[in-house]
Image 1 (cartoon, rainbow, N blue to C red):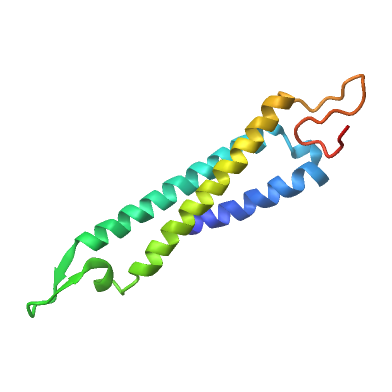
Image 2: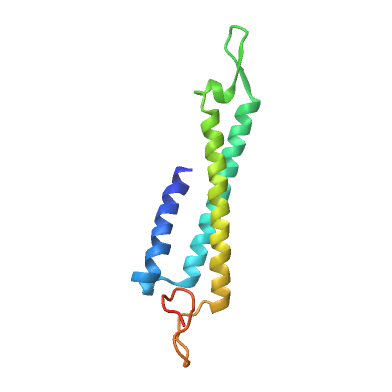
Length: 131
């Protein structure tokens, strides 16, 4: 989940700044692909964390004195934190699903082009001008 968080910060910086300040680097297909990739990373991350939490809840370790402890309690008692991280990961995934759908709709509407038409400025993906 640390990798996904750092990756998300880098991608959000790119998605926010590239269309405005570095339009040569704001290729619509690259922006859509990076958003889809980030969405998949968040999905894999929160599912893996939820599976890890579930396995820790099911496993019990004896302490040698006849008392059994849950695995996540035995490993330091971070069950609640792992569960919260999985929930926030699922929320982040849902937000990236929404942004991916919006980017895909914008991409399909503008067909990914960056050219201007003869009638005036277009509202294609990545442009900051609007009709």
